[in-house]
Amino acid sequence: MTTRREFLKRTGATGITLALSNSVDGASEAARLYAPPSGVGAAQTVLGALDVSELGFTLTHEHIANAPDVLKRWPKAWGGRAGLIAKAVDRLKVIKAAGISTVVDLTPYDVGRDIRFLEEVSRKSGMNMIASTGQRFFPPQSRHVSMPARTIAGLAEYFMKEIDRGIDGTGIKAGVIKIGIIAGRPTSLEEVGLRAAARASKATGVPIRIHTDSAHRAGESDAVILEDEGVNPARVSFDHSDDSGDMDYFLGLARRGYFLSMDHVHRGLRAGAKPSFERRAECIKRIVDAGFGDKLFLSSDSEFGGSLLPEETRDWRENIDPPEGMLFSVRRLLPRLGELGVSSKHIHVMTVENPKAFFRRSAAA
Ligand SMILES: [Zn+2]
Image (cartoon, rainbow, N blue to C red; front, side, top):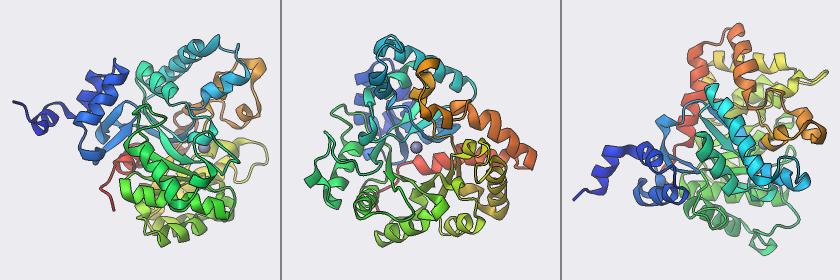
């Protein structure tokens, strides 16, 4: 009889995911049956637990799961859901061919997350995808979470359910917790979300990504709450950090052990934008030179659904996304960083090694 351990040794999490990837239910079933207990040591993708060595070049802050939400506004734009899926899969194959093998989707329940869509386009395109639980900002109401549940304990429980049992009754599990804090300091409701994320992260070993207003040093006030909750800074990323441009802000947080995600670099390309594209690229180089390349992520915070829209239906969001969409890093940012003298070794650290360390589920704290 083959023991579970022998089976794991022979196949590895990747083999299992690949072997069963033609069956949606099979893939989630495999993750439940054969992943290490509670997925510790692996990354949780929408197709099941995946050995982190398989993640490869990873974009750590993108939005794909809300693409069908855009379809509601222009139902004829793609020829319905099937047309949208076909178009999304084609686009993702192009992105994959450019060397990107994993995309982290930071679209929680309150901004139109469609987990089945994410799973289907991942399976058909071969792109690994990590889905998120958490919440963006506090919406007035949601069909998923009632107002009375919005206590710290109630929300933490909801996040843990999406991590350990699955999203929207599907068995597809979240591999990251995303929290949105609008301004420089969290409102009292946002603080509830942040503390809930901290507790769910400690209980499950899944990391946290935070939307921050870095121009107002939001990471510093968020860190006070996270540290009060006893979260390990190495399990937290302050996203949109490049909106700051302040080296003291960057190095202060990096020294404390936090990750910084540079995912708005394309926004610096707009005329008069501050910080400029050049300044953002220069800050990345200076952080690497200061010895903190192992604390950086590169991504493009794209709205994938908007990028698929026909020309006549594109909305404002399209204008703030880079024209290259998720290819911005490989086509524009990495070449510029190379010109500035960032080594290919450091680029590998930022795009492959850091995601590998961060999205590997750790033991509960
Ligand atoms: Zn985002």
